Length: 261
Image (tube, rainbow, N blue to C red; front, side, top):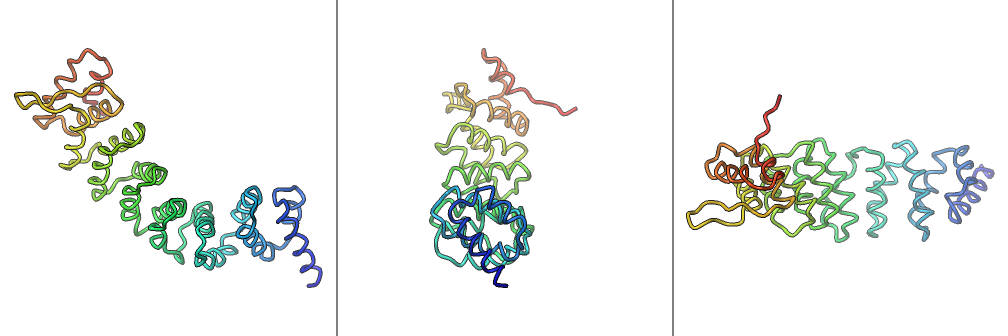
């Protein structure tokens, strides 16, 4: 017991100095994981060195989940944002959904880094994935919104469609708006149609017909989705007909309905 305590103290000092060293690697490899895990966790919480925290994080993530789960749950009670972020990040790194942790508690946190980790975890919930996705799609943090858009590609609940439609009209980066527009494909929802028409057109003519918008990535994406989902709608059909006669080849291609098989 005395030897183990002495070794633990030596390892703890070494880890705090430079946990990324090969010596610390060899020591942790031959040490009892149950004894090493609490030391690693404490270094992760206390160290001022980013390299040290990163090294410790990787070692903790490599341990069996049952060794670190109780510590994660306990440390999530810590009010410091970075402790909470790191605990949630460990769960995400392990790729598990921990029933002992409620991600919904943290998705309104003031720090976006905590929210991102909480949302990523929550969207893996076997029972609340759709609710979590809707919350993530409403996020003002761009990285969280990108994460949500990527998750929605795996399956988009109907409740998320109004959120997605609204966000396609916001001043977001072009590639993100295109990704959101593409999520509206196959969604027969009035708000989706309105958003797509607003992106594909530039108002109406004196006769009330939609005018084709200038070419842009958003215009092309909106035309593609309209052609795939709404081509039987009269006002859409008229807009697509004009697009198919456009001088620009990309606009013509975007407005063509693609038939499977």
